[in-house]
Length: 242
Length: 242
DNA sequence: CGTTAATTTGAGACCATTCAATTTCGGTGG
DNA sequence: CCACCGAAATTGAATGGTCTCAAATTAACG
Image (cartoon, rainbow over all chains, first blue to last red; front, side):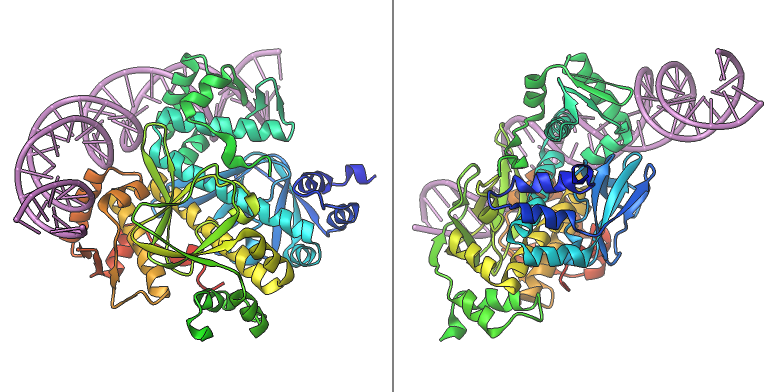
């Protein structure tokens, strides 16, 4: 029964952060109160300025963080895939400083902030895992600053595709370089600081070079080394071996 | 004597994060082992790929984080001012994923990683303060993604100046809109994803509009509201009221 | 006071944007 | 199952913000 517990994948992922993660820690995670909730495409999970009373972990589907400019422009700050929290920092910071939207049809576990923070107080291994999660988030933000700040359009897109491919592969959501990839070109554009039009032309350029294939929401990485090269991609920043 | 302890400003800053921060917490911070070290302009405090054995807090001067591109281009990811750690995340992540350089002549407290982590284990208020520090860092990275991703050159520079002005004022390093501001235009450029040449022209434009005055390493904000407006600046993300 | 770093200026080239129109895709109802 | 619809992707041409490459001027420092 507990094998199909919705928080089981989270417990499994966290258990890898420390050799001190005990079965009791696992049970404590699974004992967290939570509520399942589904969101449609583009629905808001969190709104900027909101006081946080809960934290949300993705069970199914994708989500992304974003900030809106006064002129309506949008900058996407990160994408999130299942087993990841989309707003763990709000547990401590209290007020959301950015929005979180569902990318496609998604399902999340909504966990009361207090329960989560109390668990962190009581269990060293769990609090460490939570802290590490937020630190890896931060590392990804740093890499994104570099991506939009110093890479041209081909490199930006290539880098983003590399990152998502590696992360998806890690949670077993792709094999042989093939992934469900429901991002629209507009979302890709908002994540890389480009326009949708130029993103389209850039994708064509990557396709023309035989690096990727991207149609019908399926991404196929045809030339992994080539894509890494173009995207200047080094996965150290993902800290997958913490 | 303890009033002139080098870690006193850190203890004072952390004490504001929680009402539960006790005198014993303060004493524990001041009891941390540390070594003072000075760095010249552009000297490296941390190098990408390095295993972390220490964490560094700024006592005097500025520092910045950066990543280097294969073609030699540099992207600055954040600036740091006294009482801030420049690499606290390395205490947990273990391996540095980016470089840290001294901006001018600086002085830091070098604290053994293990001592810092043990202190966090033992003292809830201190671990909370440390976690919050890394979360605010992350929030600033997010805003920087937006800054380089979706703002034009005038807004980027204006926003960066706003951020630094607010943070400097907070630690009492400026009054009446006047600050010691030792950044070169090249560093400003590397932080905003622009070239030094264009940064120069953009600064001229901001000066021409009567928003700032920036000469001889002194920044004067002449029109605070105007600068905020141009930079699309909202300081919520700094979480100064945690 | 000499030497190097930092700032400033000019002109031309280029990458990405803007604005519009067209085509394809995905889902829905008849 | 096909017709229809809105969303997403694609194309074209013109515009523009930023870059590149030099060179000149000014400031910082030993």
